[in-house]
Length: 409
Image (tube, rainbow, N blue to C red; front, side, top):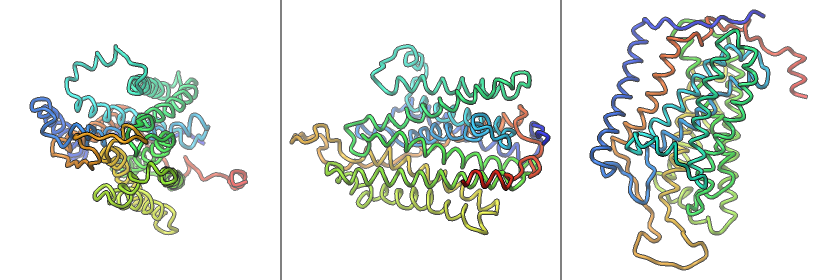
């Protein structure tokens, strides 16, 4: 089988310039929002000393988690030896880098004084999971960049499998570290659970695959390049499995919390009495992000239509944002229990459910992360040869009957 030729997009159409302008506007709006927050302080946001992580953090964590999963296709090609996915591996690596840069940019701009980042990167408190995450994020960027170079440089292709294996292991560690940020917070009743790490890994697999499918379908359609059905159907089936795994771990997370009496309060808040948080959980996370995509990708008719597959991917991403919102905002809204099992009292918000209303500057800053991700991806598609000139079914044939039976067995 002849390997498809990779080719940069022309980038001369009105649609290309319109998309670049839209993404650039999102980035500019985010920079303006960051300047406003730098000038006026976080008083102009909805964040308080009780809810210290707001909407920008929702977008940032969402992008960081998605970055790990965006590398799925490259990992399948390099680590598991599925050659049909190899032509798409460079695009997968670029998406992973773009998502992580977008997420980290939002975090840095929200913190303020980005010049002080040098201090955070040179003075560490290794008792903090945040210190470890600086290594994990920068390490992932470096490994993914080297991996991409090895794939694009023909003379170095023979080393790409090793780099792909390292990247695969590193992304698992990275997502474990991100999930552990919440799993180690013992004072928050909604967190403090070992399952947060595997839950975040499952979320990354689903979010990253959904984003890759959307970019893949959009790029091939916009450039008029042929894209066969076999590979697309394999990816959408993979997406369905990942979505089901996320629902499973979510169910385990809440059922195990309900088993312990100390968590009954926070579970009642998130599942029943939390208002917007409860609505986002059931409608956004479970229905839109879980059941709707499953129904679309496994429907005997809709599951074969590209529009429905793209809609399933979009639903997974919207549901993912809702899930991160429930975890971050919902978890902070419920009162802290500083001394479990002890009776303590103070006049400082004891037993009070904290409210949070995100402001426009927070939304703009969060959206700028999506803009940065999209702009990096678009420019990479224009400059680098990372998209196959054609990827018909002849380049990515369906598995042979014998192979399929072997897998089933």
